[in-house]
Amino acid sequence: MNLSQTLQERFAASDDAAALVEEIGTYFASRGLLGNEGSRPLYEACVCAAECWKGLRDEEFPPPDRAGVSLPWIGPRYSSHRVAILAINFVAYGGLWANWEIKERELEQLGAGRKKVHDSDFAYAISSYAAITLASYEKRLPETEALPSPQDGALALESCAFLQAVKCAPVRERSVPTDEMTHNCPREYLMHELALLAPKTIIVLGDWPSARLQTLQRTGGWRRTRELERGWMELGDNRVEVLGCYHPGYRGWRRSYRALVPSLREAPLSG
Image 1 (tube, rainbow, N blue to C red):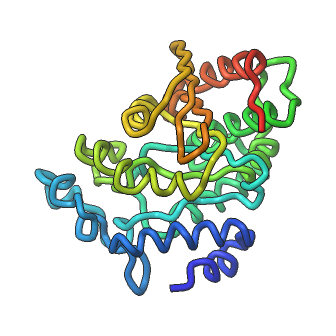
Image 2 (tube, helix red, strand yellow; image 1 turned 90 degrees about the horizontal axis):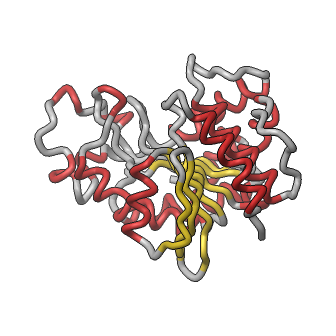
């Protein structure tokens, strides 16, 4: 399977993004997660499947075409600042190109000035986090804590990558992963993805992915408030900034954004 060719023909991915995805796809293939036609159902292919899916009912298993690992989405200008956005897992979705399919729709809607995509704030929230993060790198932080326009958010997302900490999505309310999934998946797959992506900053959505990262790598420098936590983690030979923000599914995500602005004024991102 030629992943980079498919990406460029189907999604007009940049050469850099396609090359990175090819590397990550090669890793997934080495772990037995890919077949001739795409990704294999994780409840069959993953080495942790028996443990992670134990006790779930038949109806909680997604259909095979939505049960496979998803390649991370990588924006065309990711190499400019290398900001990775880390979500928890999909909600009732999945498959090899799932991230690329979703981001294609989200960018189209944000670019048209819409804050709601599929009646959800998710895309606008992560694009707002991305916009203020890039503004810090580029030394153009706004004087107020006003949210960016959807169009500015869409442009900011193009300098980011997007991936999930847990690759499985059981068919139940909010596709909440099992405890075993949250324990095993970051160790088995996420850390290798991050090593290949080599981000300079990771925007983490929600509490537990940030907490799990802190158990897997050496971290430090944590400053925590109710709305935001900042610290660093070691990834290979590099020290990566971690910004822990409210998940967009929580109505208070705007408070996290408004806490992030003064935090970045006090301690700007660099590099």
